[in-house]
Image (cartoon, rainbow, N blue to C red):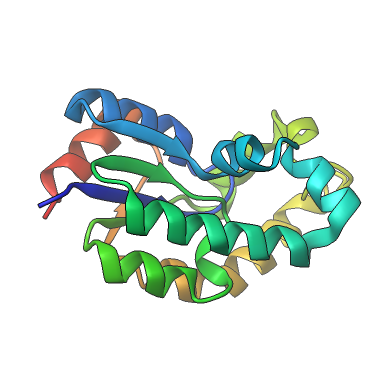
Length: 173
Protein backbone atom coordinates (compact mmCIF):
# COMPACT_ATOMS: atom_id res chain seq x y z
CA UNK A 1 0.00 0.00 0.00
CA UNK A 2 1.55 3.27 -1.06
CA UNK A 3 1.38 6.50 0.92
CA UNK A 4 0.14 9.29 -1.36
CA UNK A 5 -0.63 12.58 0.38
CA UNK A 6 -1.96 15.54 -1.59
CA UNK A 7 -2.22 19.11 -0.29
CA UNK A 8 -4.71 21.51 -1.87
CA UNK A 9 -5.61 25.09 -1.05
CA UNK A 10 -5.37 28.67 -2.19
CA UNK A 11 -2.02 30.24 -3.04
CA UNK A 12 -0.22 31.21 0.13
CA UNK A 13 -1.98 28.58 2.24
CA UNK A 14 1.33 26.86 3.01
CA UNK A 15 1.11 23.79 0.78
CA UNK A 16 4.81 23.76 -0.12
CA UNK A 17 6.00 24.55 3.40
CA UNK A 18 3.76 21.91 4.99
CA UNK A 19 4.53 19.42 2.22
CA UNK A 20 8.28 19.70 2.72
CA UNK A 21 8.01 19.35 6.51
CA UNK A 22 5.58 16.43 6.25
CA UNK A 23 7.75 14.58 3.73
CA UNK A 24 10.73 14.92 6.10
CA UNK A 25 8.67 13.64 9.02
CA UNK A 26 7.47 10.62 6.99
CA UNK A 27 10.79 10.20 5.17
CA UNK A 28 9.08 10.13 1.77
CA UNK A 29 9.52 12.17 -1.42
CA UNK A 30 8.13 15.72 -1.69
CA UNK A 31 6.81 16.89 -5.06
CA UNK A 32 5.84 20.50 -5.73
CA UNK A 33 3.56 20.29 -8.80
CA UNK A 34 4.65 23.66 -10.20
CA UNK A 35 8.33 22.71 -9.89
CA UNK A 36 7.57 19.32 -11.46
CA UNK A 37 5.86 21.00 -14.45
CA UNK A 38 8.71 23.51 -14.77
CA UNK A 39 11.31 20.74 -14.84
CA UNK A 40 9.32 18.66 -17.36
CA UNK A 41 8.77 21.61 -19.73
CA UNK A 42 12.05 23.39 -18.97
CA UNK A 43 10.17 26.65 -18.49
CA UNK A 44 8.95 28.55 -15.43
CA UNK A 45 5.22 28.84 -14.75
CA UNK A 46 4.94 32.60 -15.29
CA UNK A 47 6.67 32.31 -18.69
CA UNK A 48 4.39 29.39 -19.60
CA UNK A 49 1.34 31.53 -18.81
CA UNK A 50 2.76 34.47 -20.81
CA UNK A 51 3.98 32.50 -23.83
CA UNK A 52 1.45 29.67 -24.16
CA UNK A 53 -1.51 30.83 -22.08
CA UNK A 54 -3.50 29.38 -19.20
CA UNK A 55 -5.24 26.73 -21.33
CA UNK A 56 -1.92 25.17 -22.33
CA UNK A 57 -0.73 25.32 -18.72
CA UNK A 58 -3.92 23.59 -17.47
CA UNK A 59 -3.51 20.82 -20.07
CA UNK A 60 0.07 20.22 -18.93
CA UNK A 61 -0.98 20.38 -15.29
CA UNK A 62 -3.60 17.68 -15.93
CA UNK A 63 -1.12 15.51 -17.83
CA UNK A 64 1.44 15.68 -15.03
CA UNK A 65 -1.05 15.23 -12.19
CA UNK A 66 -2.03 11.94 -13.87
CA UNK A 67 1.61 10.97 -14.36
CA UNK A 68 2.37 11.60 -10.69
CA UNK A 69 -0.77 10.00 -9.27
CA UNK A 70 -0.61 6.88 -11.47
CA UNK A 71 3.12 6.14 -11.44
CA UNK A 72 4.73 7.46 -8.30
CA UNK A 73 4.66 5.67 -5.02
CA UNK A 74 5.12 7.22 -1.59
CA UNK A 75 5.05 11.02 -1.80
CA UNK A 76 3.65 14.27 -0.48
CA UNK A 77 2.33 16.39 -3.36
CA UNK A 78 1.81 20.13 -3.11
CA UNK A 79 -0.58 21.24 -5.86
CA UNK A 80 -1.09 24.67 -7.39
CA UNK A 81 -3.96 26.75 -6.03
CA UNK A 82 -6.05 26.11 -9.16
CA UNK A 83 -5.12 22.46 -9.69
CA UNK A 84 -8.23 20.89 -8.08
CA UNK A 85 -10.52 23.28 -9.99
CA UNK A 86 -9.73 22.18 -13.55
CA UNK A 87 -9.87 19.12 -15.83
CA UNK A 88 -11.31 16.78 -13.17
CA UNK A 89 -7.90 16.84 -11.48
CA UNK A 90 -9.48 16.35 -8.07
CA UNK A 91 -11.26 13.20 -9.30
CA UNK A 92 -7.94 11.84 -10.60
CA UNK A 93 -6.31 12.58 -7.25
CA UNK A 94 -9.12 11.17 -5.09
CA UNK A 95 -9.28 7.99 -7.18
CA UNK A 96 -5.67 7.28 -6.12
CA UNK A 97 -5.66 8.37 -2.46
CA UNK A 98 -7.93 9.27 0.43
CA UNK A 99 -5.21 11.48 1.91
CA UNK A 100 -6.28 14.76 0.30
CA UNK A 101 -5.94 17.71 2.69
CA UNK A 102 -7.34 21.20 2.20
CA UNK A 103 -5.13 23.70 4.02
CA UNK A 104 -7.78 26.28 4.80
CA UNK A 105 -6.73 29.85 5.59
CA UNK A 106 -9.07 32.82 6.10
CA UNK A 107 -9.12 35.71 3.62
CA UNK A 108 -7.36 37.95 6.16
CA UNK A 109 -4.75 35.26 6.78
CA UNK A 110 -4.14 34.89 3.03
CA UNK A 111 -3.83 38.65 2.57
CA UNK A 112 -1.23 38.83 5.37
CA UNK A 113 0.79 36.05 3.77
CA UNK A 114 0.42 37.12 0.13
CA UNK A 115 0.99 40.85 0.45
CA UNK A 116 4.65 40.23 1.34
CA UNK A 117 5.27 37.90 -1.60
CA UNK A 118 3.11 39.59 -4.27
CA UNK A 119 6.03 40.05 -6.67
CA UNK A 120 6.50 36.26 -6.92
CA UNK A 121 2.80 35.58 -7.57
CA UNK A 122 1.85 36.21 -11.22
CA UNK A 123 -1.87 36.04 -10.46
CA UNK A 124 -1.80 38.95 -7.99
CA UNK A 125 1.39 40.77 -8.95
CA UNK A 126 -0.45 43.64 -10.68
CA UNK A 127 -3.34 43.96 -8.23
CA UNK A 128 -3.03 46.92 -5.89
CA UNK A 129 -3.11 46.19 -2.16
CA UNK A 130 -6.53 47.83 -1.61
CA UNK A 131 -8.13 45.50 -4.19
CA UNK A 132 -6.42 42.36 -2.90
CA UNK A 133 -9.08 41.42 -0.28
CA UNK A 134 -11.87 41.59 -2.88
CA UNK A 135 -9.84 39.64 -5.46
CA UNK A 136 -8.87 36.89 -3.00
CA UNK A 137 -12.40 36.73 -1.56
CA UNK A 138 -14.01 36.32 -5.00
CA UNK A 139 -11.39 33.82 -6.15
CA UNK A 140 -11.61 31.80 -2.95
CA UNK A 141 -15.41 31.74 -3.22
CA UNK A 142 -15.13 30.29 -6.75
CA UNK A 143 -12.55 27.67 -5.78
CA UNK A 144 -13.91 26.71 -2.37
CA UNK A 145 -16.42 24.24 -3.83
CA UNK A 146 -13.45 22.20 -5.09
CA UNK A 147 -11.28 22.61 -2.00
CA UNK A 148 -14.13 21.48 0.25
CA UNK A 149 -14.20 18.10 -1.56
CA UNK A 150 -10.87 17.18 0.02
CA UNK A 151 -11.00 14.23 2.42
CA UNK A 152 -9.73 16.39 5.27
CA UNK A 153 -9.98 20.11 6.01
CA UNK A 154 -7.26 21.58 8.19
CA UNK A 155 -7.86 25.08 9.53
CA UNK A 156 -4.47 26.79 9.40
CA UNK A 157 -5.04 30.28 10.82
CA UNK A 158 -2.81 31.13 13.79
CA UNK A 159 -1.07 27.73 13.75
CA UNK A 160 2.62 27.06 13.28
CA UNK A 161 3.69 24.87 10.36
CA UNK A 162 4.72 22.16 12.85
CA UNK A 163 1.24 22.08 14.42
CA UNK A 164 -0.36 21.82 10.97
CA UNK A 165 2.02 18.99 10.00
CA UNK A 166 1.09 17.12 13.19
CA UNK A 167 -2.61 17.61 12.42
CA UNK A 168 -2.20 16.25 8.87
CA UNK A 169 -0.09 13.37 10.21
CA UNK A 170 -2.72 12.40 12.78
CA UNK A 171 -5.41 12.28 10.06
CA UNK A 172 -3.55 10.05 7.60
CA UNK A 173 -5.48 7.03 6.39
